[in-house]
Length: 429
Ligand SMILES: [Mg+2]
Image (cartoon, rainbow, N blue to C red; front, top):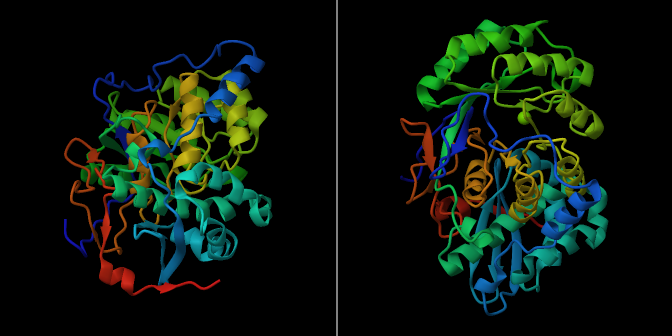
């Protein structure tokens, strides 16, 4: 793959192609039973707390200290790149979420980067915890701190990957569970008629060859749906159009109250849908559980979640069957892995959410490669079509079977054109 290539595959989602994974049938997204969590609530919390205390980063791979010399944020037009350098000359790069970083860049530059300088990067997990208290950063918990922190973490992991010849996945896991990821086709349209959504899904499937699709329900975050009745019409129409073999899911983005969501969920069950995403507003935890308890269809959520403790509640109380922590919005690989491990402990799946700018899809692929409880299909919004880079180990394209190969590293496994990086200026604090 050459520099300056322009790939644009929009609205595609992907599925883990784990060797030996049972063939997925529509409506049977999860292998494990969703209800009937084992033990008492206290026992479940104890189990999760033990998991949260286990290290994620494979520090033992690095025998000598790796002292951080600099953490720089580079900016050029709509591009935000983080560069981490160690005193002994190692370097790692990450490409941030431009949409969020244009707002939150001062947090990285002023409130985070200075804390990392002079520290041993092998203590990554301790630093991630400590920097949230530094300058009372935790008061800004959510995208304001997690996007900058993920940006730094990805650059540090890229550095460690280059030092050790390992992909990012092998810095947070003993093995690669999913060397390939299946794409599924998403339609993100609201305010279009059911018929238009169907036509656009057909058009995009012809390019992505995906074996699964997802579309939007309701009016985002409790707003009124337009056209009225669109969701009730779409649910059976999508099934009828694309047939029984298609794996179909739908995302309400917090559109409903439980009283509204439960009948919608029952309609999805009748039509053998795979999962129901964010039926109620994301921070309505008890209502999320209420919907989950009333339905058989797995409930997915977590793309807006910023709190580890809230994920702990959602797993221990059976609110979610599929966790969708965002690689940027939740603060990077280490934190996302902790959620995946909690989900895995109770037979739940993880389908990480990704941000649509920068190289979000590549970080998502490395993460999915490293988890044993990946869902069969994963979000893959679009390839970056402005960043000049090459990826020697993957085309990063969806093939005829709707599959993308995960880059093999080292580090991110994506080399950004040095001439392009040189156009950037270091953002001053
Ligand atoms: Mg969503």
